[in-house]
Length: 173
Image 1 (cartoon, rainbow, N blue to C red):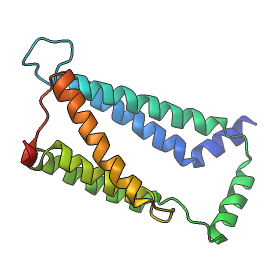
Image 2 (image 1 turned 45 degrees about the horizontal axis):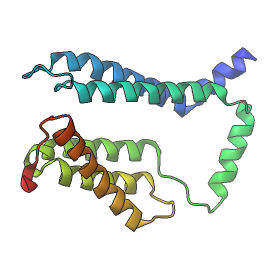
Image 3 (image 1 turned 45 degrees about the vertical axis):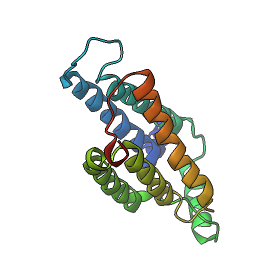
């Protein structure tokens, strides 16, 4: 029983993804201690990276624990994946191509955020990331655009007006 569970977990991409996200969270949290604080406040420059690291760790733990909760035998999972591969249902884009595109997109985001600004760069990033992850699924472009605009504006206002954290305004500033 335990051997089957370990074999199944070793094949489960959620387990490995979760483990990678947890390691990323640990790295991000430890790197946040190198951020210099210019003002003495409760919410300083290291607040957002630490909050992000904690949220990543929670997400990673959910993925890892979820991989253990699956009670289907490995053979059943393989049979279902073969049936899904032959079916014409749209699948969510995933795997190595999605990861590669996401890393490229994140790199561009980080490179452009100071010059273009948080709101514009984040809106474009969120929209394109949604497109990457929903490749063959039904797309609701109006919803994608609304989410891509509302989230960066709310986050910007929250951090600039409430937490008094400087965020690059870029071309809108």
